[in-house]
Image 1 (tube, rainbow, N blue to C red):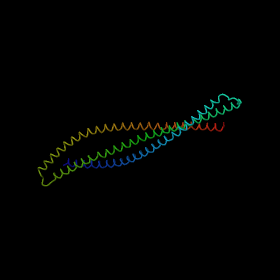
Image 2: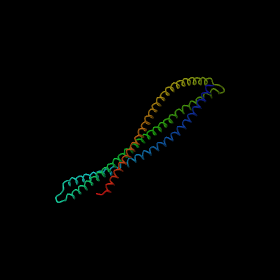
Image 3: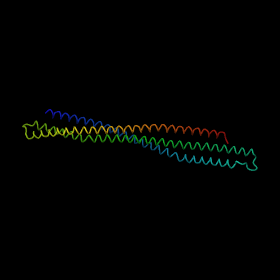
Length: 269
């Protein structure tokens, strides 16, 4: 019967397409799993960078506090020497004041440099944390892609079983129709089966149309989510150069402060 021949050919084509689709998805899954492993390694490295950057801050803060203490001490020394002691010549007193002022200036410069190092280290932490957030987004996207592909592969199995069952049914019908001698009761049963199959195909067509509508809605939602993740990645990518620029500015300020300290030290007390 032409119908059975067409149905046999259709089922064979569908099974072949399903096998090709599964092969493609399996290859895709392997690539996506490798991407997940790579991004997780990046995340580990990025978090290690945060830890290292944070470890730099306490010693620098301690150095800044010590520099502030030096400034306070120099200020107190200058305050104590604001009035000339008895028996000290005015010239000696003025020289002492000049030396104390220079000491205070050097202490203030050193404190400024120490605080600049703290700021630089804090900016380094912020930059490292921004990198971690960007990698987290990549890990989430890669993991979601793996899960979606795994779900797609799992969804193929019921469809494969369904097609194979239908193919076996068609083969059975063909065998009954071509049997010699013909069995009337069997043919009547085959006719009833074909009628039922036609009704099932009509129901399947209707269901497929609804499923297609649902799939299109899901696809639109997935595209929207992908766009949101792309925007988030773009925002994070913009934040990293800003943090790097801030770090560069802090380093320049630190270099200027260190140069100023060197100049004062070369001039002597």
